[in-house]
Image (cartoon, rainbow over the protein chains, first blue to last red):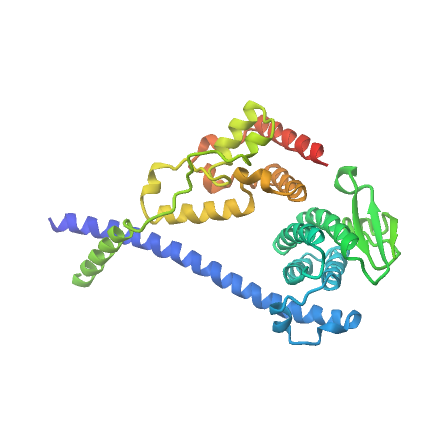
Amino acid sequence: MSKLKLVFGVVAIAFVALTAVSCKDAKTDKNDSTEHHSEMNADGDHSKMNHDNSDGHHDGDKKEMAMNGNGTSQVVLNDYFNLKDALVADDNAKAKNLGGTLAKSLKAFDTSKYSDDKQSELKDIIEDATEHAEHISESDIAHQREHFKVLSKDMVDMVEITGTSMTIYQQYCPMYDNNKGGAWLSMNKEIRNPYFGDKMLKCGKVQREIN
Amino acid sequence: MKIVKIIAWIALIALVAIQFFPVDYNQSETIPQTDFMLVNNVPVTVEKSLQVSCYDCHSNNTQYPWYNKVQPVAWFLEGHIKKGKEELNFSEWDSYSSRRKNSKLRSIISQIEDDKMPLKSYTFIHSNAVFTNTKKQEIIKYFNQLKDSLN
């Protein structure tokens, strides 16, 4: 009889251990996401400093900016350009961080000043771009570049609606993605290829000048 | 020894108790108008592959295994399905904008090409969900065609 009890006990402990493990998993997940958050906050600060150069509206408290949804297309574009530069530099870790920053500024992008039609298209673009930015924040560099290609399309479409005060260049590398080609936006006329980085830094051409 | 026994009993009681927690089953009677299979002309073989290998976590209808009746397994599966549907829900396919469809298709192709999907933890139990090489090529070819037709 006591043997039976012992067996019972062992089985029960095994199950509880299993439950405990799955609970622990969930907790680790939570921790991960909070850590991620604080990382992104730090980055937010960082990129805010960049934004301040181009756009004087961001000297408010960082938290306030997120809560008021005080994001503009300009903030999004700047984060996109920073991400692009990390890919040009073949810097996987930096691109991860900047992908997270971009996702955050996309979420904070306030579309309310646009007309209803434009709003719905912008929201579609933002939803899509956010997903790509989030994936970039957790992928290896090859996948980051895949997502960057579609993200760049989103950015081109966004600028089409929002316009921009800067002069930007739409550039194109015909060799990326098995010669299907890939476009991107840049503030500089000189080609610095984000799809191949150091391998083919100057491959590509300016397709279009915006402004 | 007495303490061990007490712990064992508590554990056993806890284990029994969690069996009574309700689980939201991911099952629906009807197939929505927006379902991937309804809005696209999917070849029969591809349709079957998608049903077996993808639809359990990427649609509103899961074919549950028997052990889903046991906690904490049910919770584990519930979390998996929720996350799967957030990323891609074939049942709501047609409600995605063409931009979103394009992105989803790109991700589907890339995930299958890299053998990231179906998940290893899924095929470990559902051995019939593994894509053979031929199947894999067939599915990728289909999704590529669909993606090109949308552009």
